[in-house]
Amino acid sequence: MTRAMFANLPKPLRDALAARDYAQPTPVQAAVLEAPPGMDLLVSAKTGSGKTVAFGLGLAQDLLDGAEWLGAPGLPLALVIAPTRELALQVATELKWLYAEARGQITTCVGGMDPVAERRMLMRGTHIVVGTPGRLRDHIDRGNLELSALKAVVLDEADEMLDMGFREELEAILDAAPATRRTLMFSATVPKPIAEMARRYQKDALRLAVSTGGEQHGDIAHQATLVAPQDMERAVVNALRLLDPTLAMVFAGTRAEVARLSGSLTERGFSTVALSGEMSQAERNRALHLLRDGRARVCVATDVAARGLDLPDLALVIHADLPRDPETLTHRSGRTGRAGRKGTSLLMVPLPKRRIAERLLQAARINAAWVPAPDADAVRARDAERLLERARALAAETPEEADAALAAQFDAPAPALAAALIKLLRGPLPAPEELADISQRAAPVAPRRHESGAVWFHCDVGRQDGADPKWLLPFLCKRGHVTRDSIGTIRILSRETQFEVAADVAHRFLEAANRAEGKDAEVRVEPMQPIPRAGPPPRSAGPERRPGKPLYPRPKPKSR
Image (cartoon, rainbow, N blue to C red):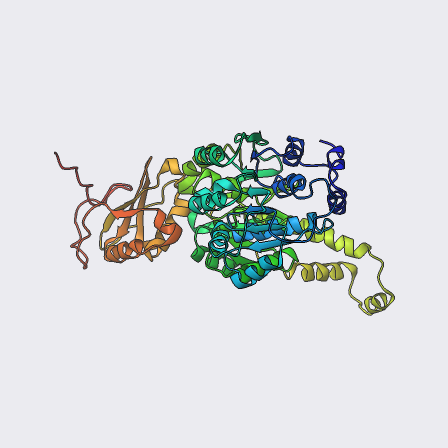
């Protein structure tokens, strides 16, 4: 893998690579360059490995055919198909700088953009068309996109396009392309549907497995941390403050969660943008522009941004919701650690879902380090280090003459001036959040007596799920809209937790528990016995019950 591989490329492409400081090809680029000329390729490579430049270089032999410059634009010579608008636009941007010196014309055809403007561009002539499956097929059906001169077709993220239901569109596009064209398929994995499509639409394809499924991305530090369910948002705040990345991406499960979390981070002082499926293309483009020019440092997104989005300075990925499958985990994490840069992927795991997270990591073949949740004390300690470093750097600078004259007017001692500087530097920083202590299990909460009696409930988290009264008690109060005094004995068993609720609020507790949404609703809460009618029962003259002993016996299962 040496610079000599680039020496065989046409001069315009060599110049473009040199201008971008490409000293040597990445493994996937080297594999494509070493492949015999003219062969169909089926390439599997990890995300962030430089695939776009790889197939851009691979197309050179088809487009330039020994020449240094492309001729006048006309019917497209190459077609690149990508699953999402963001990825298609990103691919087009990469190909534009790569083929700029070769006088290449790149045209995009993607959903959400003006189809009339795209048709005009196609009519004027082009060399390479980059688009999404639905929009490309629409242009073909309307006669706007003529494929008769096509020399090569590239399918980028082919597995994702099949997962998104684009099989019919892909087959229609490939059937419309000339049989003599070259077909390059790039995919993170090669499941059976991809292999079948390769056999149908490729001719003696060369299989290049640049990265195996069991290989962990060496440039990404995978971490996982346990967080009490009600502390998830606060833990995200502390992680952003503690790690202080140049650029971070926070993944949430739904559009509603993205909107809520994005608003909460903005309110706390983070420069934040959101990305989700219902946004218009103009809104997405504006968000990406803010991230790339540094005016925004945090992007909160659904999995619409898990593939194809390339932000070179992205140093941290936070999974605020567990990914739905191992592939999503891999692709979310792959937004960082790209093109040789280092990055961190932090998986936030609610205590009741630890086993699910462990299975997810195992299925993705990721060896994550389990780290403590970022608490407020850790954030403050790291703040002190950073602020001191910055204050010393400022103090070491030689002051301007006007600044020195102004400073001489202060009669405060040096320590007071230093304290004032630290205060000014600390001012813009969002305050760290206090988290529930889940480092060790505490003894069961002491029972509280209620004159009206109590009703036993149970929830489906237990000792093996990390249940702990330190977070269970606040969770139950929040879930049932009751105070701590309304919760009695808490008994943590292996697979469930049983707890008392004062009878006079039991109905209200159950109604509030059933209305829970989002993460709270993931823990099932049910009564273990009929809830008595409102009104306190007569007080018993019997002996006081022992702590942990139910006020009402648990119902016996009916015999079959």
